Length: 182
Image (cartoon, rainbow, N blue to C red; front, side, top):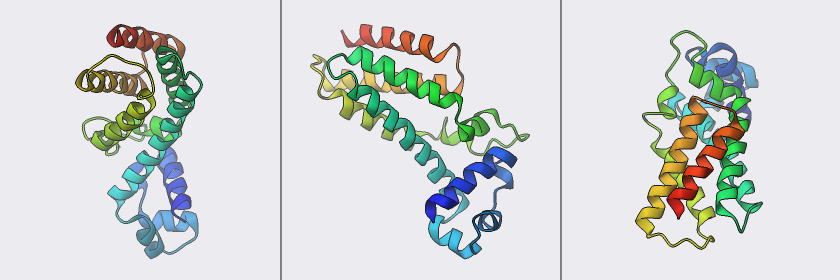
């Protein structure tokens, strides 16, 4: 039920904007009572967080696959992960609705990806740190944390506002990462 509600919320947010999403409207879309929606999700801010975190899980699964495909080459793993994340971001309906605020001044969700993105950044950095751990790096934990933070933030920045193709951007991110990781 939770997934059905989140799916409906993503479609509504993409089609009509976040401000038009209500628990009653979601209930109608899913074919359940409004109380069922509240029981599954809680409040509208919790719904927003659930939508963003579900998308984050999808992106982090992409990162995991990219690292698994390059077990001996960290820079190649970073390049592949960055490119796949950026490619998937291009076609992500929810992300486009949030970033472009296509429905007037409907920017209520944008802080979840920008100024209030702590949980998103923490989750992403935790996954990347776990994926980087098996590589033989001669960096102190503090410097490794700084490098991971840099890569995650740069990729997120390009997700929010691409400046080139995913392949070109990923190559640039990998180039910077390679220099930092030396």
